[in-house]
Amino acid sequence: MYQSGQNELLAYGLEIVDTGGLKALTLRSLAQKAGVSPSLLNYRFGSRDGLVSRLFEYARDLDAEFWHECSETVAAMTLSLHHVPVISLSIVQTCIQRARSLERLRWICSTLAARDPGYLGRAGKWAGLPCAFWTGLLRQVGADEALGPSLAATMSGAIRTGLVAHDNLLVSAWVSDIVLRATERLLHLPLTMQGDSPARARIEALAQASVALQPEGRTDTPERILTSAAALILSSGPDAVTHRDIASHAGVSLSSLTHHFSSLDAIIRSAFERIYTRAQHDYGARLPAQMTMGEFMQTVLPAMFEQSAGRGQEATAMDEIILCTSRDHDTTLMSSGLMSMVGRTSSAIVGAMAGELPVDRLDGQIFRFTLTGLSEQGMHLPPPKRDRHVMDNCEIFLTRWLS
Image (cartoon, one colour):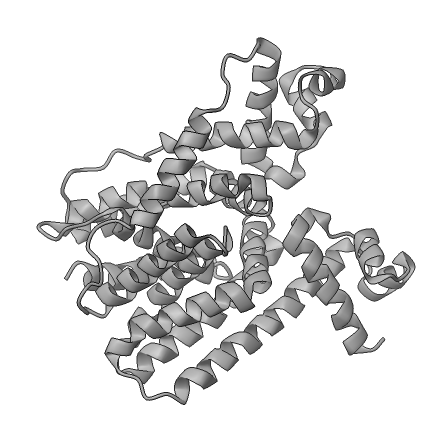
């Protein structure tokens, strides 16, 4: 079979996933989209799993071309340290616009890898593409290359923030605040803005108000249905939940579900609202008001690793919920609202180490993005080495951030 023909099919597959999520991609849906027979796709890819694996490889190759193009463009410019914030912002905005479907699929790949170890290697290596670019940019301007993994991790968080609603003015302003604060503080440049991102704060307020307006006082059966749906979403992810699963978990009949809710989507959306409300009050472990960076590295960070492992797939499910709600115009506010809450506990952590240095929610959010991105960069490593990658680069980040 010709490679060009296969790539054309995979391009159709990328469109399907971008609009409907990974669950929407099947041999049959791709056959309908491409106007070919399902038997042809079965011959080319073998199975749906084979199709998904090949789609990830195809998207990673395209993403590699994108980052290579960025590297060549930037390498041809005469840049100094002071150019980095604006260049970084331009790169992030370009990525959100031009490589949107690729970056969304990379995000999907990382959540899938958290559930299926078979994808760990692919997700970790994919995360290495932007890491190489940002490290090269630091090298070009004479900055410390050791900051490369941390900068790449933070910029990945900024890009994902833009993915939740790329055509929204508030989100665009929030992305700009993340990029400028991160690059300026890491490179010890004058700060463009002090304090939290006004756009982030406004999005969080809007999202909280929208949830507060939701009706309460449901009867017992709908409560059991939503409680079960929320639990299943957090354990298995929103794409894996079915009518039958919810009915079985709640101990009700399938007819009860259809009586109280018009569709599975209606149940899942109401469950998302419940999860969102819970997340508003989830501040993580109690933390000391003050601590040294050494105390954080030796005690708190290892405890965070243990807590994360104990929560199972819940953290992964939150990313899946953000991705799922970002695809629906009616729920993009919830998606950006969930993203706006990232960094609450991290703000307290950085503040406890900062001493007289002012710390705000934007600082905490950037630190949370850094920890998440560093963990993804090390996904392909054995757990002890993965933790060491996070710890070593976290120490580099904090040493620079708090100095």
